[in-house]
Length: 160
Image (cartoon, rainbow, N blue to C red; front, side, top):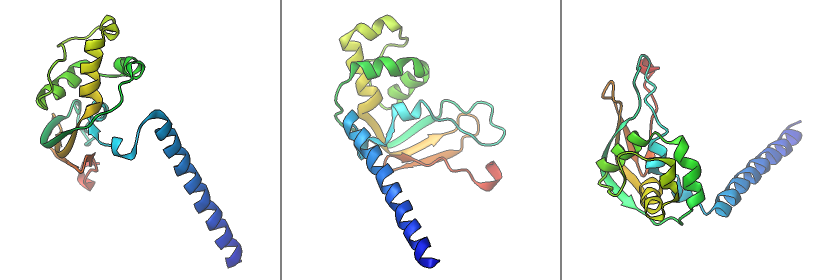
C-alpha cells in the first residue's frame, strides 16, 4: 500500500511541476518573467484593505522607501485592455506619490490612440515598482509591509 501511495505522490508532484512549467511558458510567451510579480501600480490599483468593519479600504496609500524602475516591452494593446479595469484617480494619485509625472488628471478612451500618452501610461503602470515600503489602509491607518516587491496583506486574527 505504501508503494502505491508513493507512486501517486510522485505523479501528483509531477503534475504540479507540469502545471508550473505551463504557467512559466505562458508568462514567457507573453514576455513576462518571475521578476514581474512585484508591487507595480497595476497591482496597487487592484488591492484594498479587507479588515473587518472597514467600509472604505480603497485606494490604499503607498509609503515607499525604495522605488525602482525596470524596462518592460511596450504593448499598446495590453494598455488599451487594462485601461477600463483601472480606477484612474487612484492610479494617478499613486503615480504622483511615487514621483511619476506625465499623466493627465483625467483620461478618456480617445487618449488611448495617442502614442505619447500610451508611453507615459505604460511607464507608470508597468515599469515603476515599489521594492520596499508600506501600503496604508485609508480608513484605519493600518500599515501592510511591502518587502522585496511583494505586498503582505495578511490580517491579524482580530482583524478578520
